[in-house]
Length: 116
Image (spheres, rainbow, N blue to C red):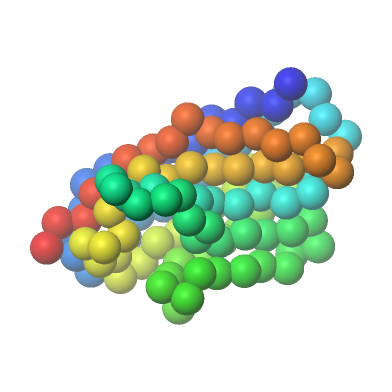
């Protein structure tokens, strides 16, 4: 069983910053990758950023240059630093982890609201 606990969402004005954190716990040998997704009302859940064990990262085009994903393997945490936030970044953000070559875990989600 893998548990993911997210923190750091909230309300911010456009142009502001927020930092999301996600901590993994439970029984596993290795975290293959961790990622952040988001889902806005009426839209499908979409990948925002992903980081692998080797440190390779990926960003959705819409957040490149504004968001930074980082991972602490010793603490089994992943962080998403979000700068220059826009109203269109408003969504529920979910943390995802894939462990032991196939087990998938999701966090409960944290609301990010960016006001104009």
